[in-house]
Length: 276
Ligand code: UTP
Image (cartoon, rainbow, N blue to C red):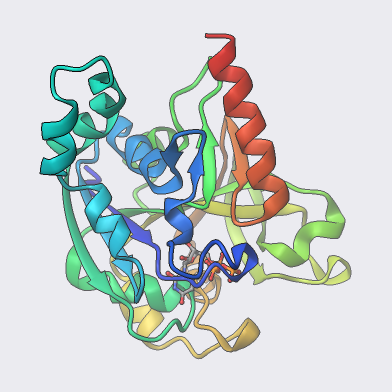
């Protein structure tokens, strides 16, 4: 039912300068795979094969990554190195990719609105590739869990995680009534609140299912925290209409937008690969 996944990938990635000066943050690799490929594979696993990517200046490497490199193919065809391309070839064969550029980086909400032209009037998924998620053995990927939930609730869904109370100022934070094990009817959400003002310690991570009315709401959303157009502010309006649920996902999540999270993810995937 959810056919498209939007990847806002236009941010500057200043926390990774100078690495991100000429390389998109989304192309930084955890082991051998760029962050955005992990995201695309998670969407594919959820049955989504249409990827809509919002890029910006200096992000052309993302388009090249999801395209055939004839020279490389020619060079390694038939050699023992060919298997290194198996995963990315698989992704390219199974998906279609479309791109649009965010001209001014006015925030995540604005990036999502920029993607409207690639999405159209239908519910869609959003993945922030710098939040890297991995399945635990008992569950599918996070987006897969959320698309299943969408079939039941047919409203916007945000993935949440409990965070230490002193870290609420890094996230959008929700409050709401638990309506099922790990599922909350959202009644309030605040972008990056000080711990003393946070309505809970349930933080939104980079996975969303959004209904298309969100586009009109974002159009009317004024710049909020940090002068940016925040998706949290737009979602609050939907929440007030009783149309947002929050889902405590099963799995691991790494904040690869921060150096700490990136190092943790690298160690985690390295250990996982070694024990395969
Ligand atoms: P971040 O808050 O992590 O910002 O954006 P950033 O620019 O990527 O990184 P720092 O803080 O400067 O280090 C969260 C997500 O929203 C996207 C980013 O690409 C990232 O996936 N984003 C943010 C946009 O696409 N456009 C924007 O204007 C802002």
